[in-house]
Image 1 (cartoon, rainbow, N blue to C red):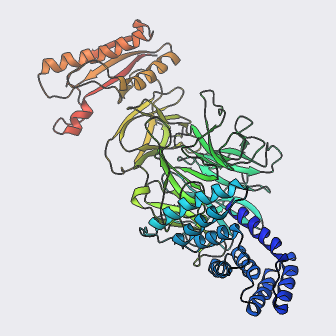
Image 2: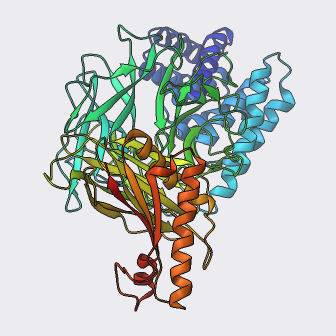
Image 3: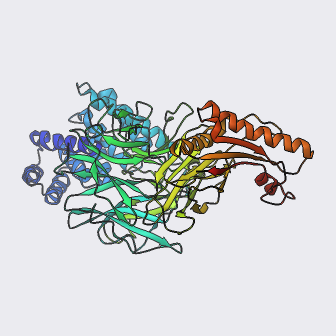
Length: 631
């Protein structure tokens, strides 16, 4: 928007100033020749003629203004500032107020923020025209100047590093996306005008040479602006001008099936519109999709919107993120970190360095995004900064830019994230699911539940081709983990992540056992207070899994078993183990599981799974389990 406005302003000046004349015949002749060159968009020739004009007549204000305008169009802001200042130093004729606006803008682009602010204020003082948008814009830029003046005195460490020849080429590489383990990078590349996806994998901390992602996804149309789910199984992207499109650009998704990708499909009219819909960003739980659109109902040109996945598997009606994120100007390139609580995006509406800046926002307790914070200088500059993503561990930012050490066009770079803008620490659990006997991969449902909130953080299925899964878990909570498949007993685990620092990833090989009598399953997410037998609320997720198993296998009968460690009185431990197993029994009865299908028994400390000499061992021995007695 800013570039369009400045281009319009420059063209206004280039056109209106033709009537101003110089008393010097040589200066006037060069000025008139310059107008013909401008009509032909030959800016170099026009600049030379205008320079000759002001050399012949140093008081030729119109020629100085046009020279400044041309320099601005060519992004020579030093030259633009010099010529605007000379024009404004000439007392007659009185310069149009718009000149102060253009001069101030050139000063901003030249990092002269104090002088820029002064000239924006002069513009507001002198401007009596009816273009209220210019006044509003001047007010916005004044705030930018005030912010930037402070930011320049507090620079951040910023040393961008090119990702290297395995990723970057002479062509244009941009919009990087990482899986939660940081080992797969998907990005856009434009070759001969066609935009496609490429993928690279990290092997021993080095990126492999990027290859086209999939013939199912890459087409003769343009594909770009993608977001990969943290587990690497879903790719949301932008497709433009496709036969099944609903607007100029629509949102699409493809699912990874084993090593291959399924054909992508349009997210449909519930999400896409006749407007421009692009730049998706999926939340780590896969239930919310953020994107950019200029559809009606927004606050400005381009806004951030979100759609939520309903229980029936359909995406809901998009909602605008509201004035806490969107402004009357433009917001774009959203990225939600795998922590689920940090949003990065670009905006030219919030106070910044003068153009598109990168901001971050934290999710509040009420589920709303907090006030955006500028990531800081010199990550943000007077140029446009967009498209930031942050590594899973929060230490690195990845972005695209054209820098002098690049391979040609735009390249992908990394840099160390400033501490204030880092996301919350996370870890993840990844692994494979197999049949315990055959060792063949299974199509299994894998679920992670935050036991503090009861919210499902991950819910997906593995492929029979590779059995793989990867689920993100933000540090600071306790999680129940379950894996289940038809005809098998479910697997249960528990992860306590109540530390403040990033955790070591969990790698599991889950061996699911087929349903048959005699198989014992430990319920790792059944909880009691110390020396108590009343079930805690956090147990409901695990108990509901057991209920589901019994309802799906109506002939199955089970014995619920309680166990303790060896601390305390033997008789008391025996009694406690019985009461705890009965609490589970009573819960199942209350949920309409027939009593004749259930028995319960306590074993006290007589059947330990580990040593009772350590805290970890005793914790493992304090457990609730069940055994299938009949099927």
